[in-house]
Amino acid sequence: DKGEYRHFMLKEINEQPRVIKATMEGRVTESRVLEQALGTEAGDLLKDVRHVQIIACGTSYHAGMVARYWIEDLAGVPCSVEVASEFRYRKHVIQKDTLFLCISQSGETADTLAALRQAKKAGFRAALAICNVPGSSLVRESDLVIMTQAGPEIGVASTKAFTTQLTALLIFTLALARKNGLSEEREADIVKALHLVPGQVSDVLALDGEIAEISKRFMDKNHALFLGRGSQFPVALEGALKLKEISYIHAEAYPAGELKHGPLALVDSEMPVVTVAPNNSMAEKLKSNLEEVRARGGELFVFADRAADVKPEENTHVVLLPEVHEITAPIVYTVPLQLLSYHVAVLKGTDVDQPRNLAKSVTVE
Ligand code: M6R
Image (tube, rainbow, N blue to C red):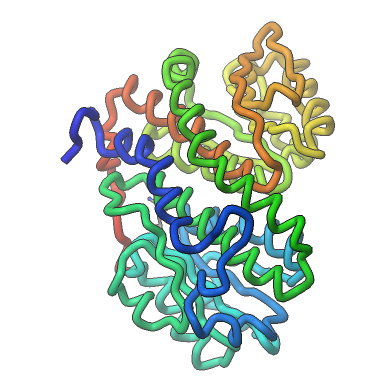
């Protein structure tokens, strides 16, 4: 039931404050991740993990890419991320004491399951699933499970599944990091920041009107570029995927530093450039990338934190977001990009919940 909403996608975008909170419930206190957050056997299985291999597809793969930044930063454990359809068809080396982590909303994605089954034969320490569907094949075949509490996701374009996956992945990272020397203070700082996320997402949802207004600038465009740095690069990838899926506008995402290594050649007044620029350590560097785009007449759409100090100028639209912790920023910054693609699709009159050629669950190769 869509309730008051015109589309399931919009309903699901708006459910995010609640479902992110639900995914934290029973897993964190005010300032700590609970020992039992990942189940009773987790302690032993995580103890000697020396490497994490993440496997997923589509949006879930983007969640895995964000997690890699967290796992290496906070736990100091090397982490590799690969799309399932690539992993399953190449020869790979599974290092000793690898935790195999599959991320899937449905738990039935054929390539992800095939990768898991193959890796099981090759031998690894344990299989952890992050999944939204209890009783799915992925959940049944994994040793440890963190269920996201997104509730049923009907829109083919994944929204609330992604932000709850990120929530679960951050909780997992903290549990792993604690076994690898993360200080109590740093853990408390991040858990407290996580508690602020549902409220910050609500604040972003309140910007809906402003985002709907700028979405008009995309209606007659054929292409768009998304830029982000660090853990915001996967957020840019996810923003581009959403725009492609539901508005059929060709969109590509780049780490902002790659701009001058090629894609800058595409930038002109017909190429809108969307940037996610929270006030993290990368903001200053990102600003020079923005200059490069502006100098070529490109129209810029910047989603930034007040403290990033990006000023609206000619051809530059700035949407100010709440101040967020650097670690939790990818969760919050995903939401305005969901709204942007939603409004572009509505303006273009596409079938938002059932985009052409796509299925909700890809159970065949
Ligand atoms: O159910 P899964 O998370 O395994 O699905 C993976 C992808 O098929 C899925 O995320 C797809 O990319 C979505 N349509 C993205 O919006």
